[in-house]
Image (tube, rainbow, N blue to C red; front, top):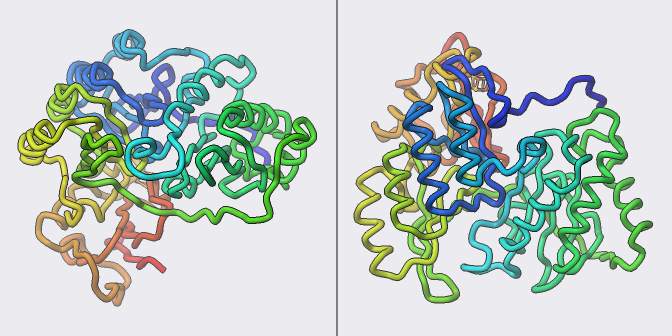
Amino acid sequence: MTRTNPDSCPGVLRLHDAADGPLARIRVPGGQLTPPQLQALADAARDVGDGNIELTSRGNAQLRQVRDAAALQERLAAAGLLPSATHERIRNIIASPLAGRVGGWADVHPLVPALDTGLQGAAELAGLSGRVLFTLDDGRGDVSGLGGDIGVHAVDGDTFALLLAGADSGVRVSAAEAVDLMLAAAHGFLDLREGQWRLHEIPDGSARLTDRLLTARPHLATADEVVEVTARQDIPIGWLTQADDLVALGAGVRLGSLPARTAEFVAAVERPILLTPWRSLVLTDMDEWTAEQVVRVLAPMGLIFDANSPWLLVSACAGQPGCGKSLTDVRADVTAAVESGRVIPTATPQSTRTTLGAQDIVAAGRQHWSGCERHCGRPRAAVTDITATPDGYRLDPAD
Ligand code: SF4
């Protein structure tokens, strides 16, 4: 596939003209936020946005209805959330949220700033599409299946498999060389492409890029045993005891929309925060007393610490009024379904009629609601699609 147009991914310096007003996407490499940065996002959401921070499927943040783009840019730059004007849209890095704290082979979080700095330090990499995604998986397999272009996946404490276009290339690299190799792969992708936005769009792109990398670095090992990559939705929820005996709390966020007021309370805990690619949060490094207070205060404000909550089964696109293509207010419909008990854990799939009114839908398991057939924001793992049509919603159960 050869593309003739540059990608249209929004950023902070190039807003998307959504139906409900300008939309800004703020890259948060590795989902890593300091408390002051979350506070800055909350302030910006309240003062120049619609009052909410939207969490995205790449662990980034979005603000809707931006009233003053210049003021937003100034605030984000001051908070360290806009470190590069030229490379802002290519800083798409997902890392295993719990790495280094709970499970996994390797702590990939220190690789995030190294990769981010390397991306920003190479002028030509500003030419990458804003859709290119880098993944850093600590070996548990939670982010390697999220459709990355270039990634590493820990196979032991000091060795990573290089993933290209979401599959194991067979190349093995040490932790010390992992970031360097990912940057080399990014340069190689630019050399190979003829307008394509993503590596998988280039004919034999992964194989050709692997050959280039091995030719330039003949010392790299290769492996016959392939890392199996699958799409999963491992949302960390609730109380998680860290390896250092501190506590992390995984918190679900209803439809990925975090009110500024709630974000301020999270920031006030003054602990590192991680945004996950499942539109949720992880608050880290708390003692038990602090973690108990966080649950006591933030659960009534809507954060989800119960792994059995039906809110964790649903996701939705923007729908009306944010998207001009939407046939309905999808988020209102899914909210009504959850609040009236029509989102249930398991059941026989309901798809006996062609279309259903929103109030008639009873849907089981993971489900994604869309305002049209584009299915924006649909998780990569198996979900039941609930899609608005001119005649009502259509249910397509997960395979
Ligand atoms: S799925 Fe359709 S209605 Fe929903 S955000 Fe995408 S284009 Fe808009």
